[in-house]
Image 1 (cartoon, rainbow, N blue to C red):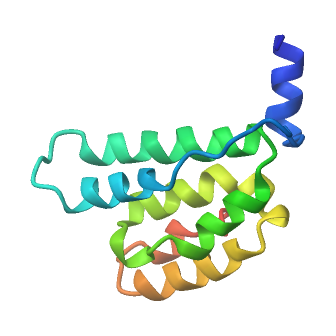
Image 2 (image 1 turned 120 degrees about the vertical axis):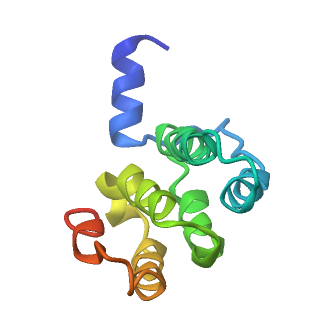
Image 3 (image 1 turned 180 degrees about the horizontal axis):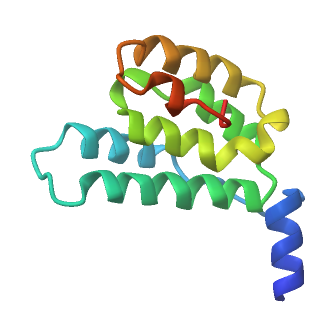
Length: 125
């Protein structure tokens, strides 16, 4: 795939009929990073995992699968950084992800006491 094809696929999310979505074990890995004892880079690593998997699904046009991620991800097992990561990586494609709206609503309830709640969701919900 050349750069133009990659850019077009990444931006438009053209469906790739040969794409096999990653197993959902990456969600468990994220949850472990949030709850783990190793503080060093655990959130950075979790953000990398989110971005890698979400961008991969977008690049392959797997919006149905990505939408199902928003249906099953447990907001209460995430922190504000990871919630914002999910929302930032999918903002451009939110019209293709109807379950994202429910995720945003659950996240706002979960983070209602966060000191920066208004700024967290500005321009990404």
